[in-house]
Amino acid sequence: MVADLIARVPAALRATARQQGLLITGGGARDPELARKLCAELRITVSPAADPANATVRGLACLLSTVEHRTSGTSGTSAIGRKDVDDDHQ
Image 1 (cartoon, rainbow, N blue to C red):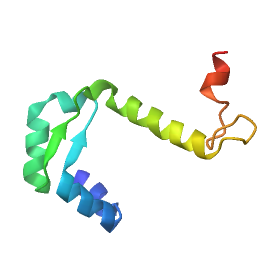
Image 2 (image 1 turned 90 degrees about the vertical axis):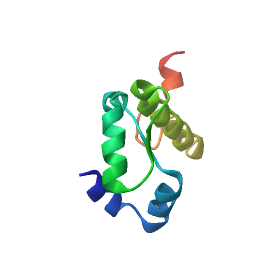
Image 3 (image 1 turned 120 degrees about the vertical axis):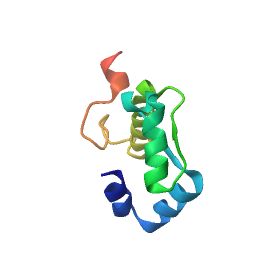
Image 4 (image 1 turned 30 degrees about the vertical axis):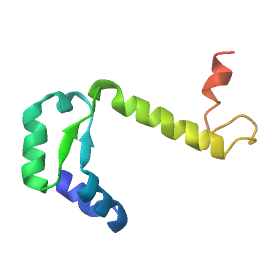
């Protein structure tokens, strides 16, 4: 399944993944056998994130921040149509 997903990634990003390796997140990343199996199967370096349980959320927060920065000045809504998170906490 992972190999199929990688095959769908644009060629430039696949080259980067082959050079830099893959980072796995979530609960499965805590299982060292998963990284070993993926590495052997994909022939790419695979390593778990430092804090795999929270890595995906941190990455999405960075992405959302980038999207909101690019769309600032659009009446307080982000590109996904949600009210800015900061507005909810003021």
